[in-house]
Image (cartoon, rainbow, N blue to C red; front, side, top):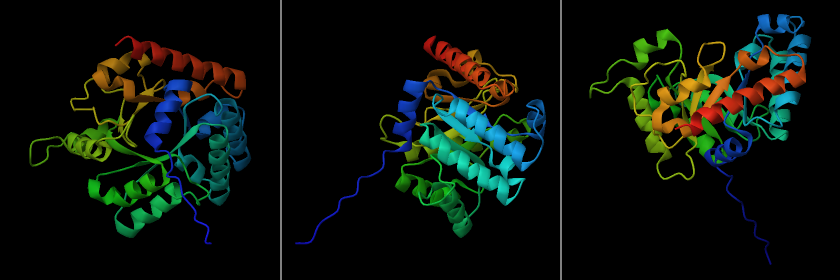
Length: 286
């Protein structure tokens, strides 16, 4: 008799994210080891300083925040040794229960996009993350390799829509042939990808919390990553104004607002908890 094996489909990222947000609070903390932050922590701008900074942040926060978001560029600048630090951080953060969102903002076509997808979204990769940020401005269809890889692995993709940098408006607010803004075109594609997903789709949008008026339809049945809280000037109290009825799906992202309290682990935890409480209060007021 031949034994049969059954494979269980992975739990989709959107469902795992909703659970994490409900149990740990809706907060994403970025891991952005700027040279200036390393100096503020009394660390050298070296691989050793990078490793100490990253390990301290992960050990302090990975067992309590919903999402940790390492910015790949700040590790890549140290070459292979920096990437090795990133690989270890991803594994340790996920082991402690945090979802890892790799902030890589990759965007390309064809086999190159497929290679990026294999780097961050293939379970056998040392950089496998729960989700990755991508850029759609080579056309939303260029993201198909990443979307398919994410779905197969139970991972997620966060697509740039309306970013917090002022330069982004010249592309994202431009008008398509049918009169929609390009950002709205991308958001509509995301909504189509998420159609029917319960409790939340796995294709998210990046929408800056610093925007005074989003001016687009943000109900995509997926998560809305909102950078800009803290050092960039936005506060949790701004979220309902920017995101309206979709605010319950927002994952506010804070980096320097938390990290500047290091290297003391207790201070890092306290800062993250304070932001999470402020987000809960802002969202519950709707």
